[in-house]
Image (cartoon, rainbow, N blue to C red; front, top):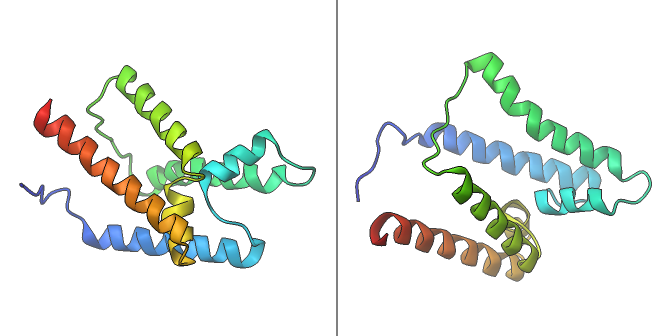
Length: 142
């Protein structure tokens, strides 16, 4: 295995992880809700009166934050080695997995594990195993 030392950034990765954990903890502490994106977006489709504003504000923050970062730190040029067909298929499969797994990686991996949820531990292990297997198959077998 070769490690791309230019892409290896443990400091920013640790800082980002700490910020995500802190944000999830503050969110659950003050709202009593889990910061799982699939649940937040899904709740928009069937929201109760008075429940829509915080969901829209949360999603707006997710969209505005990278834009703000780009303004402050300069534009980031992501490199995606896949075409639109593969991206759409991947998104569809992630959506199906999220539905069957009763949550997404943010809900299970960040919030569920911190609450010592067995269901979230199993879901996160399955997410990770399937991700590892997918990368292995796509990069080494195909």
